[in-house]
Length: 605
Image (cartoon, rainbow, N blue to C red):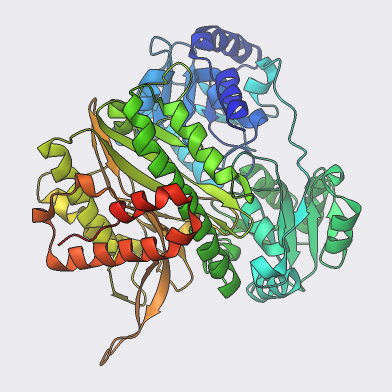
């Protein structure tokens, strides 16, 4: 698995070919009477992880981050990334060809306004663009006195000669014992939510997988079946996916839920709904503007807004929460076996970042239940740890020397999805390292201990995680927590903890708790556990209150803590957490590693 992951990265992303590929693209621009083209890191569903055939941005630029966008004009080109990738993009793209631009400093729309010539025609692919994105691009192009042009064929596809085929991963039925609810019940609930609508177009494969209790194998790291669906107000449904993905048993299992149609049928069906003057909800986050236009052009009413499934999916059932707990116990045992091995193996001074990734995946595979890693493991030694979403390659692979080692990883098990980050000490840490680590830990504990009234959003909690860093004039440029799915995406919305998170947290939601600190060129620190929102009973409370259950079980490195910075309450929390880790995992780990776990979870006094 690990070798194939590296191969997919290195074959798709090759910055040395950027200049030649841009030259080919510009030649094609001339043929199409265009002056520029927008290349998002996206597929037809706005997935975070996309199939190899949709890695157009990586193929053109060399940039392999999970979010980004390039614009190529006849005389200049730029790649736009968020705060996670400002260091990575400079390492991966040919900066003589592409100007790396941080979104915090300049948006694509601002760049278009200042760089597009009057009268210029800027192309975009309506299958890879949402309506909101299209409107922003159109506004910027209009301001520059240009024209935004929807292309009928993606220009990258026209020059990508060895582009991979579309994925054909087999679809499986997801058992009710893990889902908690059968698909028929879910579909009735969805239909009931469609007040004033004639139907819902499902463009997010995560929503489709949840609604129909299916899983697939079309993209890396997330068990997604790619496709679309329509759920009508009467509860009837149509699934649009390649029939070759369906076995006889799966087709039989879906037959009572939906009519199975081909992807090509979707266009005709939307046009028919349009002619019938139907009002259809489209997901503002994932629906391609091409489908919205098909319905509208045929006379229908496109209602672009929130997919009601997103919130239903975010609030996990009792079965999904039970599965998450079981998955985290299993994953925690694998992590402890790895951490104990790491402390010994790193003493050889020969251990590399790739060695660590391989070893951790092996321990997870040894559980016998690993389905996939939930994202490419971030294995960053020293300065690499300061690159928030660092991806080790054969070229960048470094030995793990004295200092800090940041390891962010996760797994997909059929009963749950995990995501954990630990920052590990190699040798003696500096005073500064201990100070920064302890401040990050204080933020982590503040979120874990938070108690808040019903209706509170992640924005209202985000500053809890940053307060100790702010007191020292420090911060981090990513959110504090993202939502997590149930054997689905490790990054799930709409719930999150960040400076811009408007959705109220509700019982059953699973999120990450991951404050950090990054010193460019030196080291990175992040401590991440997954947490579940739960009701809290408080004597005398006048409002319904909520808090968090910590799901992740693994030691936090005591060698990096400056205990003088911790309050009594924080020490009590850490000792209780480590006691729970020890008592839960001690019987499950390799016998020779039990002494290590006892030492790693010893109480602070």
